[in-house]
Image (cartoon, helix red, strand yellow):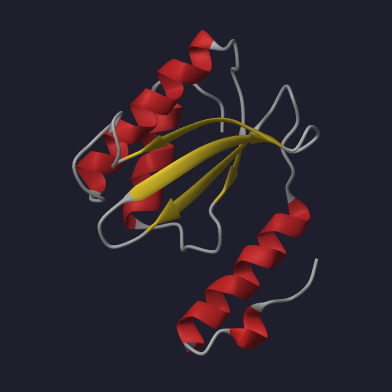
Length: 124
């Protein structure tokens, strides 16, 4: 994987890109345990469920678009997105997953998202 963080001008974005690559080298999603990848901005959060063995995104849940799970990217919105992810995973007979935080620190919105997925019965 080519290291793209040298091209990023912002220092904090460079550090997040380094963390993202380090995390991504260590974890991988399978058919039985797909990878949950969270991406957030100041306004929205998007979560993908990915099977890396087939290189396929199984489904996506976000806070924008036609099928929005919540209105904004705050802790309450992250909890709603997490419960929606868990219900769709249960419908697809997936009971466990690995979490890819994509370089974001495990606090606030990201922690609330994972906690709501765990509370809904998915092993992360």
